[in-house]
Image (tube, rainbow, N blue to C red; front, side, top):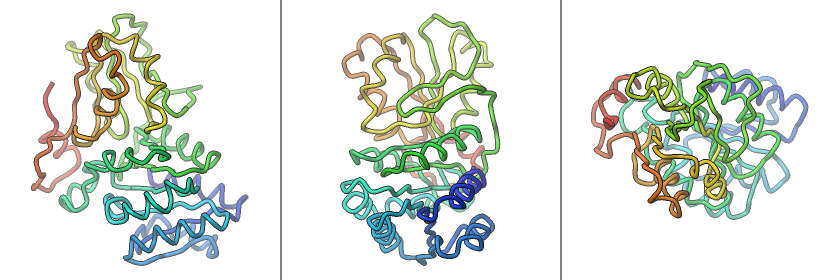
Length: 294
């Protein structure tokens, strides 16, 4: 996913000198080519995340379209005040790029887990959340952000290189994308965001979920809650998937969006356990161990 991001950013930067990439002394093996090609459009802010976000805000105020690239909690929790006050409230064209969604960096322990980040970023009124589930969605999300600069959060998995067949699919904020070809009128659906699409793909193969259709929602946020009503009114049983804890996460956002219909829909959520994940291991191992069973 991160290679797709850099690839699309590089293409755009060749045509637009206002595109800026800022890192905090990481991203090696990914960002070097961009830095070499565009030395005046690349900044290494060092291990100083609050300063990095302030720098990004300043560059944006000067008319630039800024992308801040880092891992997990470093570009979010460490600089939450700067994101809120400097970027979101001023509606600046800064995209925060997290290349360690969920437990992507599970082998480095909980300091690198992004499992409360939705809860933080979706509180900001102007923040768009782009959480792709495969390479197709990654490319389309990056293209959308390049065309529509605004306060945004691009949440990428470290090692997801999968792609599902989605010809002629258009990614639009707040809109669900149907993945399977089922002509399913049961009102049963699985809705994924981010790096849980592979779980949804595995679930609909099971007999237990044969009457469920599979959808994904790559772009969402506070501004797009009202758009959910047209989808939710068709639902009888909705299962949501996220690599995040339940509180403040995607399932909470969906339930808040369904507040006027909550008595008509059964909403079941699959999420990471809110216990502190003290073990280290691969993403697959940790998801298998800490996802709630439904």
